[in-house]
Image (cartoon, rainbow, N blue to C red; front, side, top):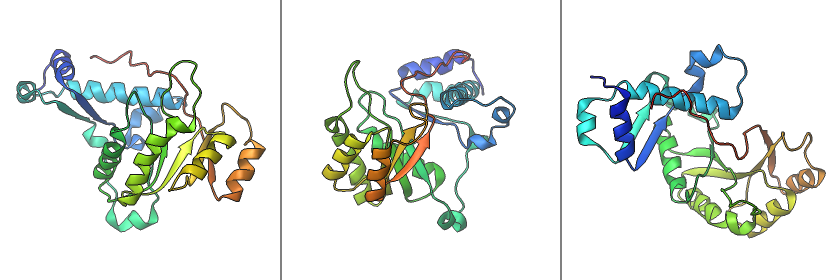
Length: 228
């Protein structure tokens, strides 16, 4: 059944899209044994392990089919939400955009819902879109992505949408422009020890929840150690 990683590499080279499912990280016993990892290290470790596990199970039939979209999953770690417990949970997703990822926002939401076996996400937070070196994030950069998020709200696939790493002036611009207002804004504590007072005051005035995160900014994921 299994083949070597060369077959997996051939499939990856031929495919146009890779859907990678790490599953519930809480089910990864190997992560619990490690010292505290940064979010980028944790993600990189999960991607490496998932790719390695998948590469060992590539079937000759799959190699012959050579699909354009590859499904790469850690099946034992996959976990859906019990319908009886759904009302007691708030399901939030944070989307990170790579390259021209506008068209992938809806697909990412659909995949998250399908993976968890739910009809709707309670919240979607979008990380700032990638910029060219030296460019400064503006409302113009955010607008196309926010319109896509608004359409997901209108289609009832998402209840609320939020932002990440916006300062007070840019958050205010987005709030005044948007039809569906941002319900939250994440602040990276690596860049500020406390919430900026002007941001706190604005968020309180317009009922925007301020959250914190520790996601690495502008760092690529090191996949050294993958057998592919």
